[in-house]
Amino acid sequence: MSDCLFCKIIAGDIPANIVYQDDKILVFRDINPKADVHLLMVPKKHVESLAKLNESHHDLIAYMMLKLPELAEAQGLSSGFKTIINTGKEGGQEVFHLHIHLLGGKNLPGF
Ligand code: 5GP
Ligand code: ZN
Image (cartoon, rainbow, N blue to C red; front, top):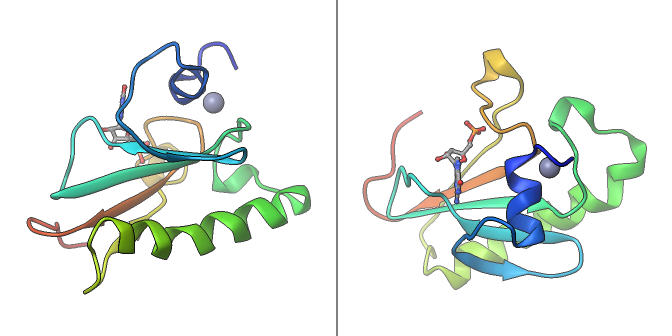
């Protein structure tokens, strides 16, 4: 997806503050943080949104879910954290590459 912002970040064409990466996922700081800690976790393979997942993504999604508490712990969020997935235009999604927001620390917004 040549016109996808997060694919460009994954490719290294646009800089980002990277917190973690492996062969499956990239985790970087949100450019406009809504809390002291605001990370975005994305799969390295382009998937448009949660609504576009299929059975082939089963293991990837399980992997991402299991990685979130690990990342939260590493960010010092031992008392808790918030995860958000915006899906589709009416779901508030602005970047159409699946991403999980991981928020925590001070200034955590309400729902
Ligand atoms: P969405 O509304 O699609 O769930 O969230 C998109 C998020 O991407 C927003 O929180 C926004 O601040 C973040 N974002 C948009 N452009 C960039 C960028 O170029 N770099 C980074 N690190 N985050 C971005
Ligand atoms: Zn993409």
